[in-house]
Image (tube, rainbow, N blue to C red; front, side, top):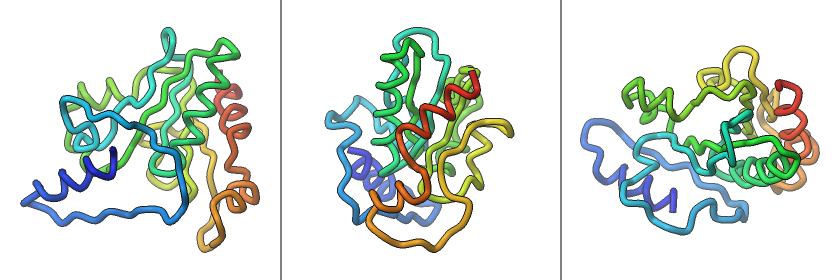
Length: 166
């Protein structure tokens, strides 16, 4: 669904170049249903809501969304209301008004970004002291499950990072 929405946004964009980076890895679909509006065109949106006032917000994009969603399920089962925010395009998100940005980022005391890359740029969502589950370097190549294991990009690491900030 996000790929289709991003494609639509790219086709409708007349004032800037567009690029889509897609994975060669198999990944479960984060959304199957279209919404009334193109959520991806806003750059970021709440993919999964918390069961109550959020104590944790997990930010992810692309293939890492599956890890964030699974971590949310584990945290919710442990009684920690957790939401997941999908961030398909930082630039489009920065173009939204401040009220929208604040509503998406939210006020949860624990914020964690999940990225099979480096932390650079994620502080705009998680803050200077937010959690980050990802890599500290660049250049490794292998199937996603192997890389995730090697670099500690796991559901368990996301849960631990979230709980450490509560």
